[in-house]
Structures are given as C-alpha cells and as structure tokens.
Length: 378
Image (cartoon, rainbow, N blue to C red):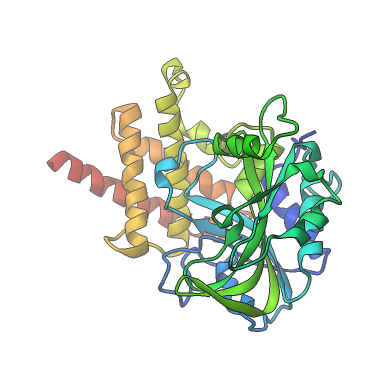
C-alpha cells in the first residue's frame, strides 16, 4: 500500500532523519554551481561535492553523511515533459566513506523504501533489483545478490552490464558497480518476469528506477579503470520527485505536490488542454523550466551567453516559446505567478529562496521581456 499521506516535504525530512538515526551527519545542499570545479557547469548528483572525500580525504563531520542535494541536468532536456524527466531535481543521498559497505547499504535502502514506520511504506512486492554482471574491470556482483536474497526473491534480481549497473562522475574519479532498485508502476502489477521481460518493462516505463547504491571502490583516469581506491565507499542516490510520485500514487512527477500551486497558477483550464497530449507536454515543460530557472537564480546565476548563464537563458526562452504556443499572448501574467509559487513552496526547505524571491522574479521578468523584443524584431 502506498503511503499517500506523506507530502514531499515530509519525505525529505523522513529520509534525513532515517539516516541521522543510523549515525549519519546531515549536510545542507551545496550550491547548484560547483565550487572549484570548472569541468562541470552544475552539480548533477549528491556525490559531486564529496569527491575529495570519496578519494580518501577525511571529512570534518565523519565517515557517514547524508543530504538532499539540489541538482540540474540538461543532457536529456528534450525528454522533459514525459512522466519522469526533469532539469532540476533533488537527490536524496547517503554516503559511507570507508565505513559500512554492501550489507548495510542494501539493508537500509530496502528498509527506507518499505518501512511504514520510518520510511516510505512502498509495496515490496513491486520491487525489482539489478546488479552488475561483471567484466574486465570488476567481477560479477554475487555478493550483492546474496545480500538481496534476504529481502526479495532471487528471481526478481537481474544481472545487467556496465552501461546499466556501473557509475562514475565522468572520465576521472571514483567509480564502481551499483545495484539499482526499480518499482512497478502499473495498475495491476507485473508479478514475476524473465530477464527479457524485465528489460522490456524498464524500456517502456512500466518499472521506474527509484534508488541506486554505488559501491565505489575503483578509480578511473582518462576513461579507464586504473585500480582500487584506498577505501571502499558507498554512494547512494534517490530522486525525491520520483519517490514522491510513487508514494502519492501519481502516474507522473508533475502531478505531485511539488507542482500543485504552480499548476494552479499556470491557469490552463480548457477542455482543449485536458484532452490534448501536446498541450500537456508543453505545460509540463513550462513548470519544469521555471522551477529550474528560479533555483539557478537563487544560487547566483544570471542570464548570459555562456556557461551557467546560457543554460538559464535557454530555460527562460524555451518557457516563453511554450507559453506562446499555448496562450498565443504575452507571457508575463502566466510566467511570473508560477515563479512566485515555487518560492513559496520551497521557502522552508531552502530559506534563501524567500530571500531572493524578488530578485528571481526580476531576473526572469527581464529575460522574458528581452526575448519577446527579440522575437518581435525578427
């Protein structure tokens, strides 16, 4: 049974409290703009700010950490508007820096997902698990399978190759095999599946990834695994919007309470909209892009023609295009109330959102006006 009573804010708090009880120091989210790392534009995972510590440096708060990290990814921006893809999202994560390893990582992942008292109360009968099948860089992860067999039937555990069950931040840094948890989102349940049936269910979205335990024990240099790290680490990640979708019994992330107020302020009410898949997708793009834009502004990004500023400019201008597709009019009175709603929704979790609310409003409004002038002079 889904714990539909939990709000997104409660899920965020529940996750951090769960791992705090298990000896983890809770970290605040780092900025979306990485510090001292010009190789990437944004933090795209909770582990990025922790790379020095995953490589062996001692963290001042100890060797067990947890956080809810703000992230931006634009590599699949063209997929935004489907049931699960977002440019901005929050990543729930917990880390072991040379402390616990597979046994506790898997146990706590399963407990948080399924416990009604401390976790999300998701149905264990809808869980499926994948593990690394092994290659020249690392062996088949039979150890993870043996641990998982304590919690779910072996025929719900699938071996998959490196493209599915190996994680690294890029061509350099810590990396390793992972085990991923997927949840059945079909109305009636898929039940037992063969390997091929499971792969097909993943490809067409009938199961959705909700958790990833990375066992970071290797180092990559220039795209090649060169050896083992000085310590074995655990890096876990779970997208807050996705687990909220499941807990609240929704079929897509845009129907979760993150977007309730923004959807209301978007003011699309016509029957034409509710029956037109194209309009639905466009409205989701608007909701996504404005949320990402406000979070970028809150972390000091301003529109420009390069780097982070270019991404912000692109998000705002894409929003204008889709607003005009739907409304056929100047988008100020559509866009700005949505921005305002996000500042209110996230003010408790990220207090600086309220501090920069007026600034964000102004920055986005100016960029909207600038783009509209460009369109009218072409």
